[in-house]
Image (cartoon, rainbow, N blue to C red; front, side, top):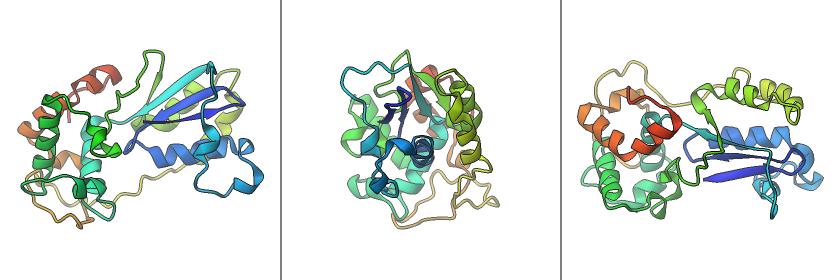
Length: 227
């Protein structure tokens, strides 16, 4: 989990890997570019300028989350396999399939192991969640951000959000013609697509495993256990 803090507006945005983190970081930079020193405005390492200061009391905290079903598929297709297969290089699977990856996570879950000790991309979305956090779902990101920014403290940021997220497209390497179950399909770690739509990675057995692993996230964030 990472968080960005605006000193000027005194609020926090929390986010997680594979839950729109790149979009959120650059959106936050656009909203608060005046808080970045002029010489660092083009730096990709701008997050260091948005760290919480000691004893601050943010007026609100947003936590951006993603449906666990699609998030774990995205982790498999982008971090177990593909050009950025950091996770795939750190774990040992009998076969590189979505089924075996989920089964690996289920074993860790039942052993009460912390996923992020293997790789931070595996961190659960309920990690460091507080009941005072305002939940924003990635699936409806623009509308939910605008709704929560429309208060006296942050309403002047709404036009920036609207302009930044207009026609925002999540560029993914998906083959929409693939409609067969692929949860048991074996891939190489270097395979980078095209991939099937996330729901085709699931059968009842895999869904049941994901339901068990992320049960707390489904409950906290209000996602139905329906694919």
